[in-house]
Amino acid sequence: MHAALLTVRENGLAAASARTIAARAQANQALIFYHFHTVTELLEAASNAAVDDSVRQYRDAFSSVQSLPDLLTVGRQLHERERDNGNVALMAQLMAGAQHDPVLARATQYAMAAWTSEIGAVLGRVLTGSPVVDLIDIDGLAHVISAGFIGIELYDGVNTAGASRAMSTLEDLGQLLEVVNDLGPVATRAFRSKIRTIKRRPARS
Amino acid sequence: MHAALLTVRENGLAAASARTIAARAQANQALIFYHFHTVTELLEAASNAAVDDSVRQYRDAFSSVQSLPDLLTVGRQLHERERDNGNVALMAQLMAGAQHDPVLARATQYAMAAWTSEIGAVLGRVLTGSPVVDLIDIDGLAHVISAGFIGIELYDGVNTAGASRAMSTLEDLGQLLEVVNDLGPVATRAFRSKIRTIKRRPARS
DNA sequence: GTCTATAAGATGATAGAC
DNA sequence: GTCTATCATCTTATAGAC
Image (cartoon, rainbow over all chains, first blue to last red):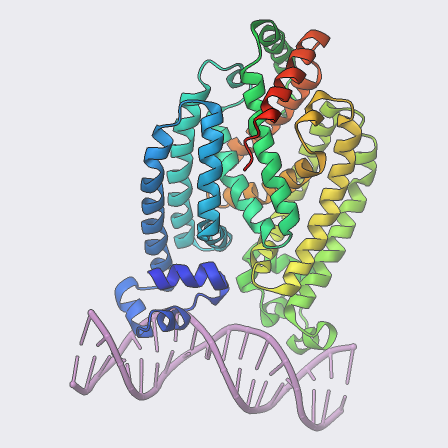
């Protein structure tokens, strides 16, 4: 399972054949089919275990978050570590393969559900009572963040400078929420009333 | 070229072999190598042509955009059409493959540069003078939007409900910019001063 | 559980006839 | 430019010895 994840992280899903993975593990190719039936089921088992492990590692950091600036700090640390150890690239590869493979689809559903529920819980705790929740759906925001990280990671492999700029801007958007969150009572009232006029004329179709 | 794009869109990059593409075009497999040298170079040529075509189609709509609400409307229409015709899924597949293939990397660089420069130009026109540019880098925002669409499209193949929620929230974030943009003079001043205090304590490492 | 051997097929790419 | 035929290699997956 370790060799399977290493292969996808370093060489991509296309290179993750039974023979390549087995060679990396110094094991026999036939063992993969004996233990996991198919290569994709091996990837699923390995991904699920890795996700459980990563999420468990961040549970403490998440539960200590009490404010939006806290969350931005912890979120940045988490993303940097997960990106550096290749887990985001791994997820991106699996998700691309998942578009046409039901087993990989199940694996990525599991991973995304695990992360978005964690992120959503923290966001909910930090943003309750904030004027931004009048406009922004918390659960939707958790999905945007998770999916956005995947997109930016893929972009990073193609245009590193552009991706790092995108990451900075994503953090700036978090700071924008922070600014709105901390407006004084007068500005907050103006903000809320402006939201109402926009909601009366929704841009969504 | 048409058959190549259809294959990637409908069956994924893993299925885009010379034989599969040629069969779809009712052509001979060997012709691909005669005309394009390799399969990935065929994909590059096809993708570049498709991107040029799509961008040209939207140039008029983009140039008519004069306000942020305009942009959100045009942006939503553009994304819906590009998603429905499979161009976003195509880009996502190519970008995933681009992580470990220099030719596909070149193709996706071309595509992303074409889109982000268009989006960045409109954003710049619409947001100049707005208080949000004190905090948000326009070019970075264009990259976030492009990469974000890719991520959400991949997520859509795995969790349709979650992805549609993410898309709605992305639009709500656009509306948040609109709200901030349209605050009265008093609230705008409060907003700008709050940005300054946050920038003095930057969250970025 | 782990190995060898092998089936049965797909793949990129080329040589050479037309 | 287009075709057939082919090579060498890789693929998943299984049968059967140990």
